[in-house]
Length: 196
Image 1: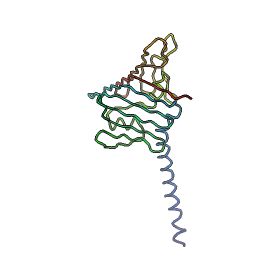
Image 2 (image 1 turned 60 degrees about the vertical axis):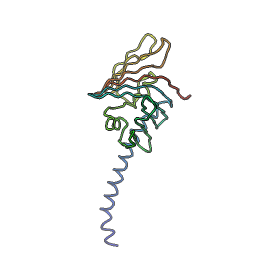
Image 3 (image 1 turned 135 degrees about the vertical axis):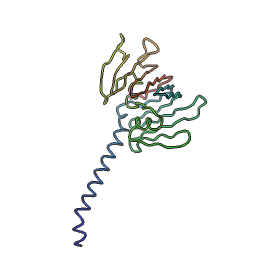
């Protein structure tokens, strides 16, 4: 009994350190996946072209966004899956490549940087596809057209340009993103936003 009591401060210290580490890990996972909580749910289909250093990446893209959860498929022209990305507040971020290798990271941007070689700014894109600036990101200059639509903005280390299909369109058809050593073009073929 005395050995147990004399060891208990050391055990308590170890448990406190373990609890602190687990709390930090839980915060990091929640933070990376829950940033979509303010974005409305949507289904997007489109095409993406990425140039990063000496690499180029072209793919069709299908994206399902729900509060706290993203699922993105990058596919080849004939429909084969190049990569499948899932981010969930409880499960973290996972990318499954065409060869079935799985990659995990603390954030979607870190995950795509490690697995694909370029950062995919999901936190911002959840809002940019709607023609909006993203809350929770650093805000720089915003340019608007005569219809008060955003045509260009800067958030964190991203410079984003919006192109609209029609003068009355409220959502962009094309988004050009430059930053973090990558140039990304997203062409939106369809976007269905859930009713709020």
